[in-house]
Structure formats: structure tokens, C-alpha cells
Amino acid sequence: MKKHNFSAGPCILPQEVLKQASEAILNFNNDDLSLIEISHRSPAFVKVMENARSLVLELLNIENKGYSVLFLQGGASLEFLMTPYNFLKTNGKAAYLDTGTWSSKSIKEAKLLGNIEIVASSKDKNYNYIPKDYHIPTDADYFHCTSNNTIFGTQMKSFPKTDSLLVCDMSSDIFSRQLDFSQFDLIYAGAQKNMGPAGATLVVVKEAALGKTGRIIPSMLDYQVHISKDSMFNTPSVFAVYVSMLTLQWLKNLGGVAAIEKINNAKAELLYGEIDSNPLFQGVTEKEDRSYMNVTFTLTNESLKDKFDMMWKGTGINGLGGHRSVGGYRASMYNALPLESVQVLVDVMRKLNN
Ligand SMILES: *Cc1c(COP(=O)(O)O)cnc(C)c1O
Image (cartoon, rainbow, N blue to C red; front, side, top):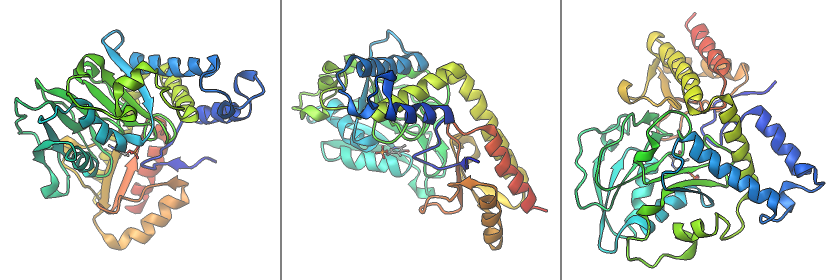
């Protein structure tokens, strides 16, 4: 039996996608060649790349709105640096919201290139909430935020209106809920949280926002270079792009983001409901800022730890340990995790109470 995989990332992928992907490793397109031994410029792979790109625009509902989709490498972590290279004017200024480890890492990289203003931070309470009252300076070239804080378990429910360009790291909740994606000038996400295996980074960028910094940008860090080469300036990570395409196709067949959002809501309500009603557990984050992807919680009585750990491990649950900077537990419930797996977890939590 497959495990109930609550891993924070790399994450669970749909079983049928894994099966198709493994078949393509041996024999892609019935051509008696492996997906990973053919040219990335072959018509068969170019079609994969084109299909992946158009699925992204379709699922995010931003077709024909001036966006380019790229599949790059270097993870979301390299986007921390590519963002200021492409959007921060020489002698310009950028505004950042600090909501966790990943935000602070993005701030650290941006500071290498210029003047960064942190408009608000929730570090004072170990990032257990999303700051709300902050002001984005009118002269900021862009505002950067992290939609979902994978480690701490908070999620932005709305995004500020600003005249600056709006940039968002959506690594851990892209394609999980409906948003007006056309409000963003740049969205990026490492594939391995909700889309595919590690090795590809999704970038969705509004072309009109590019080319305004006056900077000399190294080729590999320049979105315009990658756009002009259809994500094939260098050899793309073909396997990660292919599996991402299969996952996006799976999501489309399921009914798209609207359909998965309903399932994700049901999963989150089930688990938070148990956390709030079971006296042996408590949530880590402020209720209004709770993440529907990564649910963080602790035992109210630490002496039950060994017993609880033995119980959930015994049911085939995997990856429930909290991040070392938070402790406790973290249940990551990405798109491919079925509601039944959450029910298994909730049943264990209820049994602990008896
Ligand atoms: C995992 C994660 C990252 C880092 O992604 P890499 O692809 O490993 O560089 C960045 N931001 C968020 C929100 C994440 O969850």
C-alpha cells in the first residue's frame, strides 16, 4: 500500500502521473527511446514544453494577458536573485514583506543588488501570523511577498493593491486555490511542492514589466533571454518539465484550480476542525492566517509524543514531523494528497484522546 505522504517537499504526486512518467523513462511516445535520452529540441519534447506552458496559463486563467511562462532551473532560491536583477532599477528600491524563512532568504539575496525596505515582519512571534498594516513606499520598483509559508504554516489570503510591480513566491500553494493571478507581475515556484519533481522552476512573468532597470543582466539570470529562447537557452530539465506537464494535465482533467480548491478546503477544514476540538492538540498559527497547504500543530501534553508518533507511523503516514525551527508537527496537504489520507490522520488524533 502507498503511504499517506504528508511530506513538505518534495511532495506527493498523483499516482497516475508517476506511472506515466516511469513509462516515459523507458519508452517515450512509443519511439523506443527514453524521454531523458532524446534531444530537448526534438518535436516531441518541444510539444511537451509548449503544452506545459499553455496549461499553466489556462489553469491560472491568465491567457492572452501578456504573460510568458518559463521553466527554469536553480529552484525558487535562484528566483530570489533573479527578481532584483530583472526588476530593481540601478539606484532603485524594492519593498519586501518578511513572513518566514523563505521571505528572509529572498531579502538576503535582493540586498546584494540594492536598497531593500522590509515593510513588515512577523519574526517577533516566530512567524505565526501575516502582518497586515504596512505601507509600501510609492517609489518602490516592486513589492515582494510569499503567498504561503511552508515552514510556519501561514498563508496570505489577500494581496495589497500597489502601484509597484507585484512579485510573489508561490512555491508551496500555486495551483491550490483560485486567485486573481492577473494582479501579479511575476510569480515563481519551485516545481517540487505542488507541481512535479525538483529540478524545474516555474516562472510566470508579465513581459511589459521587463527591461526597465538599466542593469546589465547575466544571460542565465535574464528573463528576456529565456523568453526569447522558449526556456531552451540552455538544456532544460526535461524530466521535471514533463512530469510537471502531466500533473497540470491531471489537474485540468480534475476540473482545474476551482475543483482542487474545494478538495483542499475540505482537507484543511477536516484537520483544523480536529485540532480545534481535540484538547490534546493546538494549532501553531493565528487562525485567520492559517495555511491550507501546510498545517502546523503541537501536542498540548508532550508526554504523549512517543505514543502519538508510534500511532501515526503505524498507519502508514509519512512526513509529519515539524520543521526544526518550529517543532511539533506539520501536515503538508498538497493537491495530490487525497482527503482519505487526512481522514486517517484525524482518526489517529481522535484515538489518542481515548
Ligand atoms: C521550498 C520553498 C522555496 C525553495 O525552493 P527551492 O526550489 O528549493 O529553491 C522557496 N520558497 C518557498 C515558499 C518554498 O516553500
